Image (cartoon, rainbow, N blue to C red; front, side, top):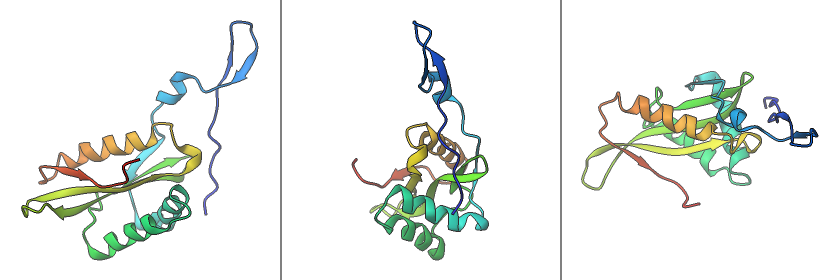
Length: 148
């Protein structure tokens, strides 16, 4: 699978002038390098991202492939995040229905490789996905996932 860039810290000086390898707040707020719709050449990397993020379970990776195979997924809303050209995160949106038969977009699953978690990448994917979802005929998005 792709080689990932290391999560990069920021060299800063404390009040005594000593350097420490602590990420600065500015680094954490830096936008993702690129967020774009998934493409067929990304599918193997997307599977790898879900396998890494949810290890040891492969259920989420299988779910992404099943949604694609069923035609329920919405390709323009299924997004990847890239870091130095490598896929490091993925979010899936698919068509679903509430018990009332009302159509809705379903957001699930979403994954970020462990080395890139807690850097705002998942939030960036959700934000971009919801912006794009607002431009569709769907009036709501339902989030499906684990409570933790």
